[in-house]
Length: 406
Ligand SMILES: [Zn+2]
Image (tube, rainbow, N blue to C red; front, side, top):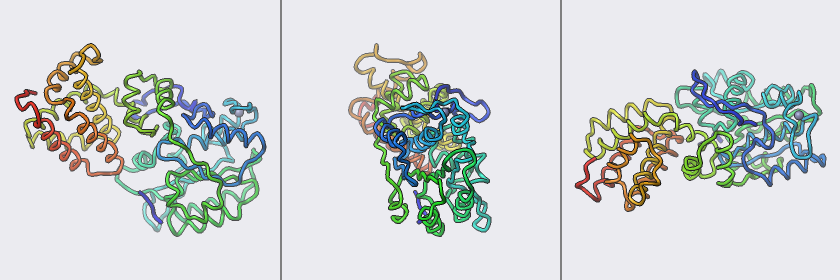
């Protein structure tokens, strides 16, 4: 079945070398965005001493099921927890939040050099920890991008399952329990799945399994039947808004735009929030793109396509989000220019763009760009995607007001 398809966030700053988000991670319940009912249920169960030996935390990508699993572990292991949350400062909390607790183990998809040299979770733990501490809401695609420049598939292999069994044979070092977090059990190799099943069927004493999945249809039903299911609902928009605004200090109007696109995916919302940092460059590319589309200048389009193709995926997405923002501003200009929130340079362009972006084509334009944003994560060919979009733009812009001069 190969498969496929903290306060955590108190302070945000750019690591100028890595160009990635960085968060201060504490990993209390209060640091996990949304899921109020689920958190309350889990807290109650822990306080009543009901800790199942295997739980499957199921939620769509961006639901934050891995941060939730980490907050759960921190709460169980906290030596000074309250009725509602872990303390965040005891030695145990500190180790759990830094992913360095000796009784908390992780298994996660890895990329091996070859099938004869399978990598293990312990070999890749330093990278995984670094990536997860920088962004607790990291997606599978972001993890693969973090560890490999090429488009490769990461899986959980047989050797990793042997390693899980080996790790769990040892007694807990410090705590009463040992935790084994299996991130994305849906990407376990078919030859490894029976081994995992055996481990979960005959769990070593004091072991708690947390399987953190986006797609339970790809998990063996025999594995699922031995776990208690925790199904996460989509994070409501107002909690996504609160999450972005309080943690990343995003202004209300920008947060609203991001939430509309992210559709309950907080990982995507965080990624999109970064676009603020590239506005000037994005504006320059967008001006060039609109001109090239309007004139149907294939050479210009090819050159721009090559430039954007070479960007990281998150930068490509941020460019498209920026174009959405400017197009919406162009539409607003038709109704009330006082509502615009743009720089002078942006405003000059928006004035021209409003000749070709209007009520009749804005929905279609917006749909096309939203689809492009999602397609980038699904490893679509960027150049084909961009040319397709450009041709659609050309026809949508020309459909009305042919006299417009961009
Ligand atoms: Zn604590």
